Image (cartoon, rainbow, N blue to C red; front, side, top):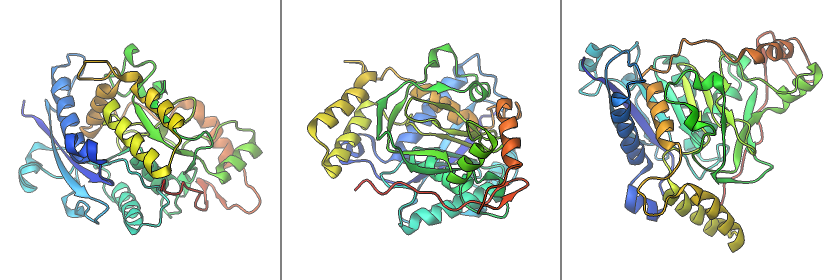
Length: 364
């Protein structure tokens, strides 16, 4: 069977600190290497049944900070078909858009952030065959664009936004409990990923909006559900939403499968330099980061490989995107919230109209 070529547009929203750049290149280059390696592993995995043939990956990089974004006319407009490749050059139309991490906050005033946010909204609403993935900043920007901004087509989704974590930075390796509603879509997750472990370095989190929390309290709901069919991929002790998954459309990780202990340590040191962190705080973060390091080994002891494989399966439409709706335990809560109104809030039959939420200031 001919290979299923997955064409990914990677949007660089930052440049690595110098030690990482000199060894690994841009983030887009790092994602290219990891996704191509994931394709090789998936193609050899007897437990993964690929519907459209063995996978191959091509990455085209775009400088989002500099205003370079994939032209809309180059995005996929129909389900995968091998013959479509010839109409869009040797690599076919863009099947997926990947938004990298960044030192910026999603609520910074930089014009490129607002442009990218609007671009995400356009792609999501007008190009249903294009998958969206975000890492850390990318995860938060997707949430801000699709779950917290007023839009006539998305009023039912105004439930979550981004804000600074009251618990401070989550650094290094922390156990993440993945949701079975998420992992059931991906055959690469198994008992070895319990708990799930990838490098973390963030001070912002995706949380329910104040309006959604007020409505939940008024209706006696303990947790604000994500709009169907969205779901959280899982949680850690410091972060209840470690990623977002909307089957067939959106996937995001708060963590970084593209970071190993070397990359994360160097970035943490750069954070410390810019913010003038005390030495003992930096030391504690570095210790947490290096928990995955195996002395003398080339690879860390974490789940970054599985995380990359899940992303590629999602890009290729091999994630069982018809497996079912949101976690059914959330349905009663969502129905309750839809029936409640609160003073000063306009609650539509399908959801909410909310103002923008408080977002994290830039680190420096």
